[in-house]
Image (cartoon, rainbow, N blue to C red):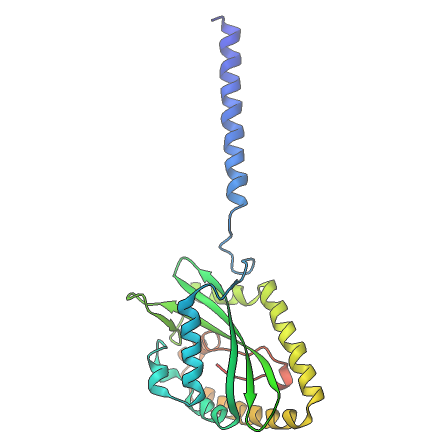
Length: 235
């Protein structure tokens, strides 16, 4: 083979390898992202999470601390006072939809629970949105995580909460809740009374919490996405 042809073969081979490398880069970039802020939401795709959430709400409805203790990482951080207030107002919960974003590095999940809540002696069912941090233990058990968080977990949670799909979900719940508050005066009065009691109980609990647990409480416990003027603290 002549020299010039050998050079042409070598050049063609190098070009082909370079193009292949570029193609691999583009393929990798098109793959699923680990960025929670950009991740797509999964809906009711994990049966373990679905069962965990429904069991927790059933126990919360009757303030069954023993049952809830089996479902959380730290039973001492179950907000019993807040749940006692809720139980005096709430008749039932239903229609659970569990949206979640998974943190594959730690096998944990930011879970957003959309559900309907009915207050006692009130006909209206109202939409609520509550968020939890769920982790899988070394035994493979799913638990709602109420313990202290490390920096990486806080970063993941904060990023997940900024997710565009979550923001839209919160907006939809807010609109539905606002509509009910405007149309049902009896519900609004009863609901705001409940919120006032819950807020007082939450403030009292926060004032007595140590700094380390208060820091984790800002991300680990749940926050509802109802309007700011009447958002249910129903974690």
